[in-house]
Length: 162
Length: 319
Image (cartoon, rainbow over all chains, first blue to last red; front, side):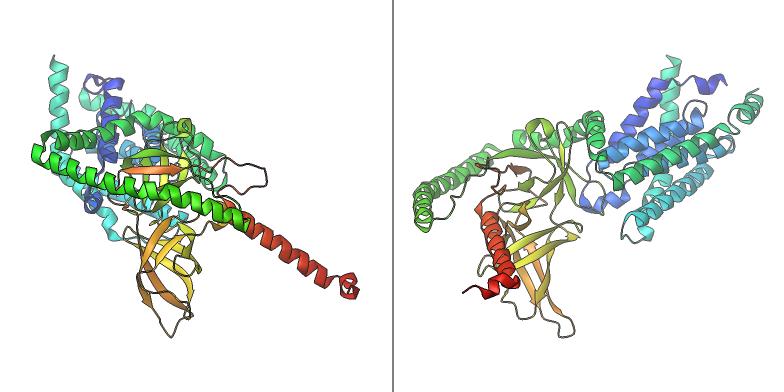
């Protein structure tokens, strides 16, 4: 267990806030649909690396922050991200034994599921039609996962070695 | 060793806890969403919470600010001089117009005096700069850098250099969110500049297009007509340009003509906006923006009096 508890809470929060900044960074109009779900990715990484520290409540608080910045219905992203953290808590022990490619597929499934939930909630709040394009961020995120996971692991070991 | 730790830990401390936490979070999020939709008091809570995320919004806007600063710092001197010259010329034309404006205003005031109509009042304003556009590809909103501390309020009209841009929908301490008139959920009353016909303009969910609703097939509306705010409903001041009609299509199978227009405000390009304030009222009964509503109110009052007089039996007997 020494391996997982080495990551301290401030560092995790810093990384999550950085991901939040990336998530709300302005992008050109046509590119927004291809934006990887940075916050979701970082939350998955946190949940997998330090499951005893990062959990549902982290997802909830970050979701509230995201809703405040984006101006959507308060609580929508909070619900989605806490669901994501919960799913991560369910599968994390299996997730760790997977190879990077298998992990990427699982990330696709996890993010796709929560995005579907988000689309359902949008249809509840008003006239809004579900389009399959909502899976694009999940797909881009899954493609990005092996690189991101490797990079974060390297950063972790470097800073841990010092 | 590692495996043992991993197996035992989830069994005893994470087997059931995340479920309870999820239940709690889902409950809290649902309650928040419900309250957000149904209670207007949530606006103030939201405004206060928004102050927490202000640093993040500021951090996010830094790269684009740096970029725009960099383009100015690195652009060629010739370009800057050209731009400077253009701006000077524009300033000259505008100041020329401004001089004539003063005499026209005086003349207008005099004529209104002669006609015994109320004076038009100047409309105060503050400038605001764009902080960010909404990331949501399905809505058209933006955040500007003026908030409650600067006097901004919910429902305040926002214009840019070319026309009406939208209105403020939520206010936090140092920034506020503007609903653009291109958003599908935004509608406002307008008037044809040419003949004073009144319509409703609704956003179409795209930047370059708005819809004019419920136009009768016989209405005198043509391509190129200018739509200005009518001042009805009291939210927007009267007479600001809104959109120019781009297409009038008469479909015999439909009760109304299909009319589309193009917003005059450069919703995609402008960075600088003006937030308008209602001028200080002279009396309590004054309408917030000007005299047009007061006149309408007076007309309505007299119409009601006439109707009452006609319907009452006593009035009928009177000579």
